Amino acid sequence: MKLAFLYQPVNDLPAAVAFYRDVLGLDESWREGETTAAFRLPGTEVELMLDIPPDDGPQWRPGGFYQVDSVDRFLAEHPQITLAGEVIDIPGGRSASFLDPSGNVIHLLDETGAQES
Image (cartoon, rainbow, N blue to C red):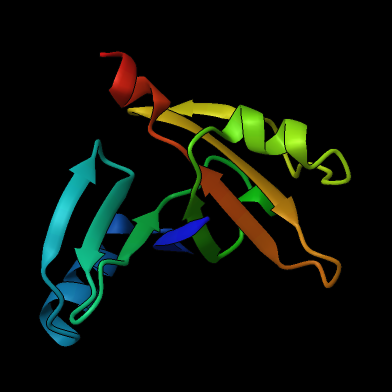
């Protein structure tokens, strides 16, 4: 597991982008449609991902996105994990979220779709 993103849900992407770019001085690195944008965090490979979540489920809480080789394999190797929401297809791969014993969300992602292209 390697930390790839810090996930921050927002309710107004243009306002959030303006804040992180113009007030905090971060450089935008990419966008996905009208709901997601990411920023480089200086001095690290980790990015900040801003996203308008589709609902208020626990899988959309703020937290780290950890990259794994395969979300499906990781979950099969850790049967004690209970998902918060469903495993979903994302651009380039798959994603899943679960809660730790204290209720903090842990997000997983892989790039299996990017490898198949």
